[in-house]
Length: 157
Figure 1 (spheres, one colour):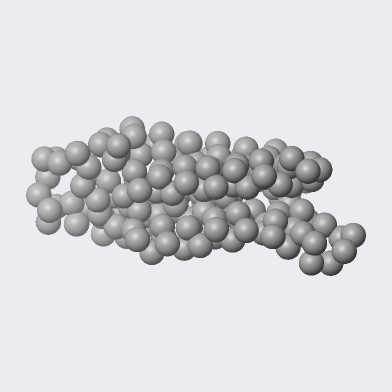
Figure 2: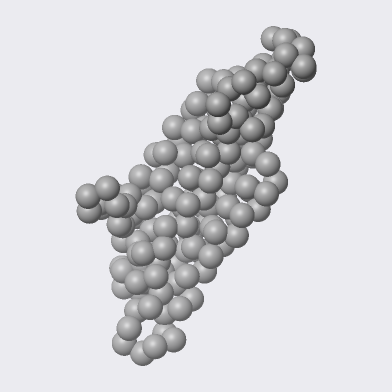
């Protein structure tokens, strides 16, 4: 289940990119992601809300699972989980103001899956992943410090 090689880490990173595009980047205006499946489902009458809730929860769990597989730190996973819970609960705002679908508007504009994927990907990019037995811990720490942008060291395998 956990990533065991750099190839697994690269696949996780690419998978998160695909989830970002699907969830919050199907429709773009210039360089800005505007709407994805999450936003589109929120506008479908009657059946859209439960389907959107199911999609949000399942995609959120998938994103967090990828973060666990990539051995992200607890802080990143916690903040990602909070963002994903906010994204899943936004549709509760429907009905607060009569006639205005506040939840649908907020769900269309708030890109929780995109933010969570981005946080996990940034953590992956800041981590030097080392397969066991390649070098001593001191050598790996020296390599991490010498590599620009690397702040974490994780042993795979």
